[in-house]
Every structure is written in C-alpha cells, then in structure tokens.
Amino acid sequence: MFQTITSLLIEYGPLGVLLLAFIDSAGVPVAVGMDALIIYLAARNPPAAPYYAAIGVFGSAAGNIVLFWLARQGGRRFLSTQAPPARTLRFRDWFQRYGLLTVFVPALVPIPLPLKVFVISAGALRVPLSTFLAVILLARTLRYGGEAYLGAQVGEHSAQYLKDNAWPLLGAAVGLFVVLYTLMRLRDRARGPASDLG
Image 1 (cartoon, one colour):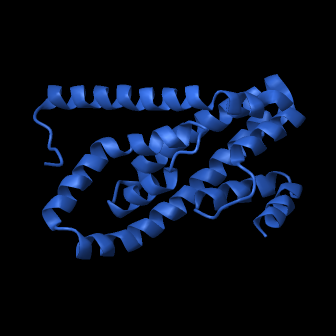
Image 2 (image 1 turned 120 degrees about the vertical axis):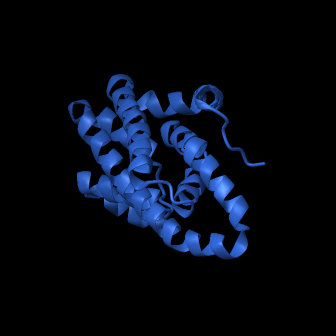
C-alpha cells in the first residue's frame, strides 16, 4: 500500500516531493527514502537540484512541526502523571540545553538514526518551537542541499556512494555530537555551575 501511494506521489513531481517529505517527517512510513529521492531527482535534472532540496526542507520542517505539536499536546499530560515533577523539571532543563543536539545530528546525517524519538521528546518537554524549528531547518538544509549537490555532480551513483560510506558517516555523526556537546559543556562551565540530571 505504502509503495503504491509513494509511487503516485512521485508522479506528481514537486508537489509529490513536498507531500512525501511532510508525511515522512510527521511519522508516517513511506516506501522510498527522501534522501534517495532528492538524489535521484537532482541527478535527473541538475539545474533544478536546489529547487528539489528546498521543497524537501520545507516539507520536512512542516511534518516535524506537526509531530512536535502532537507530542507537546499529549506528552505534557503523560509527563504530569508518569514522572515525578522534580525529575521531569531536571530532564526538561537538560534537554533544552543539550537535547537539541540529539535532534540536529540525526536530522543532518543521512543514516538511520531515530530522529522521531527526539522530536517527540522536544515537543513533550516543551522546547521552544522557534528553537526547534531553527535546528530542523539548519540540519535539513545542509542535508538535502548536500544531497542535491551530490546528485547533480555525481549522478546516478550518488546513492551507492552514501551506502558505501554509511559507517564513516555514522562515525562522523557521533564525532560531531561529542564535539558539540563538549563545546556546550565548556560554555556552561564558563558561565557558571550547570544543572544536571542528578
């Protein structure tokens, strides 16, 4: 069923890409990955590569906002009944300080990391929407823009290139997380004592 729906949406061109990016980021599984689709479209029509990347960014941002908003509505009630208020507050403070790194890295790197889990956490813990949206837009712009460029330059072999380099990309994602987390910890130490999960 998902394969049929995905195929139909692809036939609609840019509108189909927009809808696929939206439903994929909103938590509905699709039969084709957005990364492969953007690479394919950019390879097929290199001059339109930036256009397809922008459509993917916009659709993905909209879908993530929907998932974020749903988590905010339902998560607030869940946290109020399932977690001690003090622990919830400490975790919320930690997530608002460092947790968006766990949104940024999987949103940026085209490997299977559980982005939706962190989007839901951000919504449930009431991270400011503007901050969340800025992280998603930055990560998706870098990701889809890079893939569109890769597709336009390398062509049909781009997807295989990403598959062949999945482990180095994963290592880069972990390394990026560690570096950014360390920088943020150093920044907090310079400002004063930071609260922890204790």
